[in-house]
Image (cartoon, rainbow, N blue to C red; front, side, top):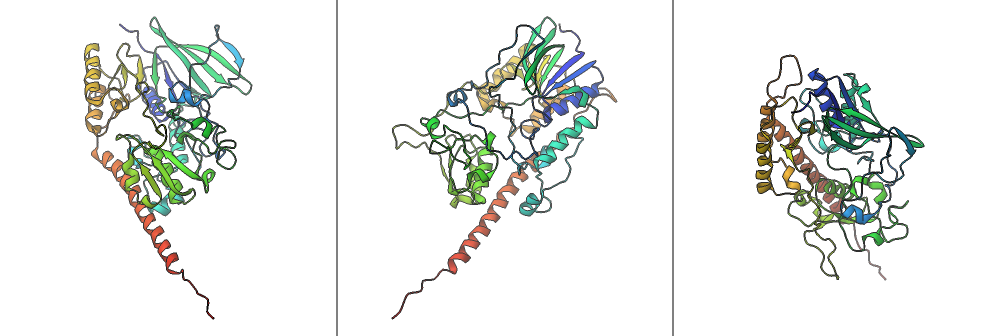
Length: 455
């Protein structure tokens, strides 16, 4: 048996945290809803507080590459024995910086990004309109930041949120959750405890960068990125896509992009299509699960070279497959509810209260999914079963009470169509830009002539 839930905490003012707060508030069943966000504003890692403030500074030096390779870089910080307490300002990296740069745009059709009752404003940037046309479905990161912020502000949820505050530890004691918190100050950090009935984790799962263990990498980029965009004492710089701050730092530099998933493709195409980096930009990928097809379909094949095999010419491969721990949270039913205690949830698409099946059935769902999807990153992959997953959660949520809560709409297949059409539009734009580039090169070549001297 579990005590009635009257006091809740939502971890993160991310898009998931924003809609979770909205949903919980509309239930009108809770005495207290607390939201803790460790950045200085809402939006989450993709459109966080720094977006739009001109974050074009060179990225931070990457600390402790071996720890990043073993996924041990962001270990828990020491917690004072007695709380509340004041401690010196924490000086070790927590990777709280958002993954934004001044001209960052969404790379998915906004129909697939927006909440069902709040359309994203139709504000295509001048750049997006210039390359995708007047009906561009993509928008600047500042539009997304304002969109998330407005969900808090127009409903009066601002007083629920504490910014610059990190949930450092949470444990269940009896029927209550003891949550230990740290708020960053200018010169010191303040620690305290709050007691709540349920915890909603909405912080996402891509925060600490992962850099594989590559022999010689530390010496190659031991100084991080210098003023000129390369390491100041090593031959080059090592930058994770999380710390990409725009193309200018790589002007006329020889660049290797390790990987070919979404962020890698965005970076590689940006550097190559604008001819900022020294061409070609090299893309290295090893693994069929990655999205090299995006690079292959991009017509910058003359500008981006790719290799799907490790370089075995030297004494050791350039890239070794990581044998890291499983990249998922075990024990979750439908990726949302913790089997052992339904007062701990990880935000998915559940928009209301839900009637859960017996614990054994929830465990069996997880075991069956491991058999099909494996016990790694693919476990959480919903594609291509968007409709089945969404409708399962909608059935669990039920119809709810009239005039209370936020009702989940039925799944609309145009959401998936818009999602795929967005990818197709980006690739078609790449093809057009490449054709224009080839035409320009042809005109340049046609004007070249040789004038031999004569007697």
